[in-house]
Image 1 (tube, one colour):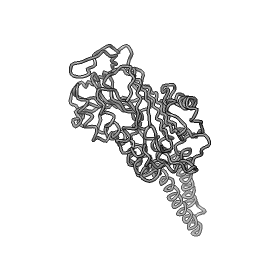
Image 2 (cartoon, one colour):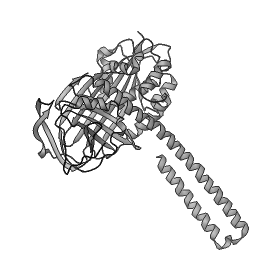
Image 3 (cartoon, helix red, strand yellow):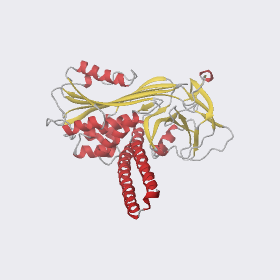
Image 4 (cartoon, one colour):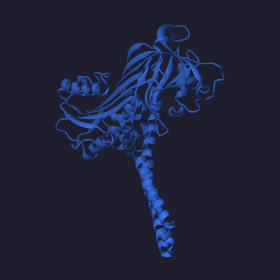
Length: 449
């Protein structure tokens, strides 16, 4: 929108510029006074263009600055959180870092003191204003992506007879595009159903029962919820007729049978010697969205790869890729995960927000002291010949205190052993990591962490 306005502004003033130039050159403009007058008007016009367009670009640059800070913060947050989740070995992992990042950013707007500092440090951003402005742009871009279905939504559930502080409410609604709904948490079964119904609608029925009735009681004051849903088709779909039952190595010796998809096309690829892994990018019909698969060169190399990725900037990992013809083998898989995030977030530096030392004094109009009782995420992904479908929902309950190119003629990318993947969006030359996972057993499986 901003760019269109700038272009239109330049177009109008360029037409005026041409008209004045013509006027200067016209026969009756030979009069010295008239020429002088026209030139003075021209000078004024040039300065007007300069100052007005600079203002336009200044606003755009400011918006991009906040957006860039949030996207880079999410990338660092993803790396740090994955490092903790990966400590549980021999399990599939799947989560939406941006969903967790967003709901924590929302909570940060009502925080103060040490709690605010811990949140901004953990989210890898300088301040809550950057979070608010950055997510305002991120939400608009996420919800306007073409050729795929990508939706992200926030909602605040507030206990009946309580009210949000105006400043918190304004940020929640104007920057995070969140609705605010009062609800009776003491009727916990009905309240849980209300929240879960909203989540199901936003995730196309892929995420069910995010909140359990036992999670809610008379002490619950707010529930902050973020939901994200993605469904996209591969730009180069796999032919179903090429899918065959093949072996997938769980380690050097043990195998299981999986449905292995096959395709031979040009894809972005690199063999990263530092990671001792191959990287493949599978684009969706909207080329700004893609799945990056990181495959260790050794069948039992997943642990070593994760250790190396712990010190790698995930937003830069696709640099220096090239686009050869690649013979790809990739298993179909479907994963559902439920992650209790209290412990992982505590390890990241947020233990204080779960304790009586928490400071969320910027949320409610009433002077009650609040703390976070639970942060939970449920996530879903299915990858098949047509494309991928993924969803996640994160709930936060708050209650009162109590490389190098691989030189081969034929490049083969055979994902027949454990690998890591990310689903990313390119935004203004930055990477927004929407989902991330580890596949150690590519079957239809539900995982609780």
